Length: 123
Image 1 (cartoon, rainbow, N blue to C red):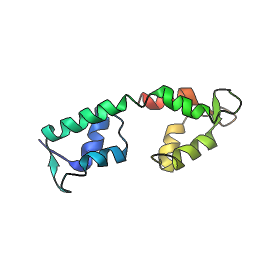
Image 2: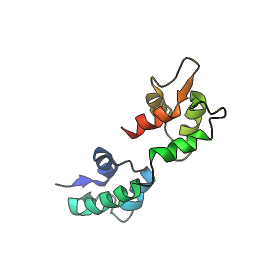
Image 3: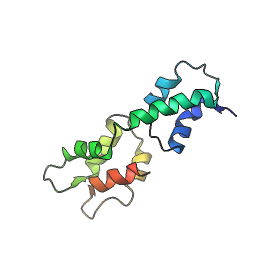
Image 4: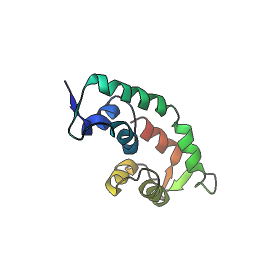
């Protein structure tokens, strides 16, 4: 069977990868818009994304968020985290951020960013 090229990102994510939309576009640019993708075409894309993934570890994300932890408490405000997730890198939609932050805030509206990153990375 073949899949539509718009489904490549979904298939990669279903197989445990976490490509950005720009990563997926980079590998599908040479395909015709309506071309369906065979396993033989999909496999090299999967392998390339899989190799690239090892560069993005939870520790890298935690280290990045640590810069926003001004008092070294292990927490950042959910408002600041929400702002980062919706304005930097591959921007998330507000509803996606709400879903991620669900049950993550403490009573002061802060998020333990190490726990947050590990939760997000574990799927």
